[in-house]
Image 1 (cartoon, chains in turn green, orange):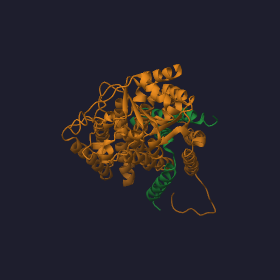
Image 2 (cartoon, one colour; image 1 turned 90 degrees about the vertical axis):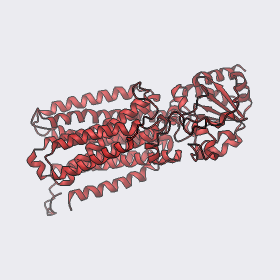
Image 3 (cartoon, chains in turn blue, red; image 1 turned 60 degrees about the vertical axis):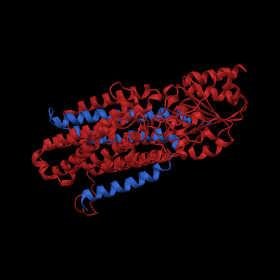
Image 4 (cartoon, chains in turn yellow, blue; image 1 turned 30 degrees about the horizontal axis):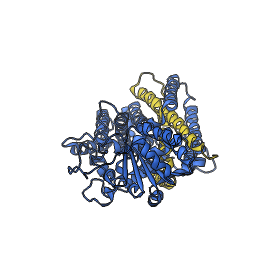
Length: 96
Length: 478
């Protein structure tokens, strides 16, 4: 099978899976859901790492890769930490 | 993924291993999202998801660090800058600043996808570009387009949410805006398609990037502040789809799967928000609701009764059930802690307290829930529209704190009202309604709220935080 077709199959199945799991999230947690899923979309960092890897030094493409690493890392770290902060507040009330 | 290799050899190369690790990471992301379905497991879910990310990054780093590339040090530096900046901001941002933070994160995800696609394109030599399959080239164009508009769209949303001087909260619309948006969008798509015919046409990619950046601004600037919950959710979805497109560029399943998960999540939230306002996505995006004065009729007139703190406190003291209705005004005044203390004051007099949360109250999905959670309000007391509406009839007092349009009874019966048909909180059915508000200025939709002129409604004018604190003090003094 053509890799592109496999990719499309994977893409469509992943969307179906996403719809399935996200509809079960209660409205109370919609903000952490957004910031948390946002952190996940920082997975672009993987692409950024691959794009910025190079033997050559002064290449515009590689430089864009570096920038991508910065933004994606910000996205990942910021997203997870801020989500954790919010969820901590929600969790705190369980015992009381 | 070449032709079938004989099973006996079963030799996985490095790329195959990496893809399996990515699959493992994607499973962890999925489990993390699944655990968000309950408050009890949510925090662990976030950690599971973070673990998945760590695994994916570590595996990628391991694979690229195999060679002796000069760029490795720089990659390390880039990781450090991003991590430190993200950490500082995430730790420092106050809960009231969360909508801006989410907008900023969306934007960063978008620009990262754009940069990955463009970087990958520029890194590839013209000879190799000619060998790329058409769909990869198309994906480069689309990742650039969606990533770019997510970036500038998020920045404009950020500016609106942060109350920037340069970009007004109200929708900015001009003649031909829709046509311009359509032209830019079609232009971007055509250029993406053109990439297939002319793989070496680098200028085309730059053009797509410029179009995309302009599109993001145009799309969001025409939307009013109170429609931001929809915009934020939609941009969230875009950032995921952009990541997915970058995945198509690199043939990377990790990006495709996770991008799709996030894309789906954003679309679902967008849909929930639109339903909560009884408006179509097109109406939210292009309706320009929130302009100076909509309708032009000026709404209902009459006498609004003003209540003093003392009088309001006496009524509250005699109540047995009180429903608190928070809105954006509570967030602006940062009144969540004061509200919690006030509720405790009521509860100490064995008055039953509940909170009514409208899905679009505030500036992003779940905004009120986060603020009240910060103030330690038990989440069992937070009730959504369907749960709470039947309870207003039995409530002695409904206390509206900084919410406006989501309480306007005109949405139920006035077919000429711009918000007609929008599901609202039936606060007017409570025996007494108190509305804490700075002034009689109409709400975001530019319409006067009928609620304020009802017989059972009393206005308590002032800053939400101040009024609520004074009410607590007055109750405590009795």
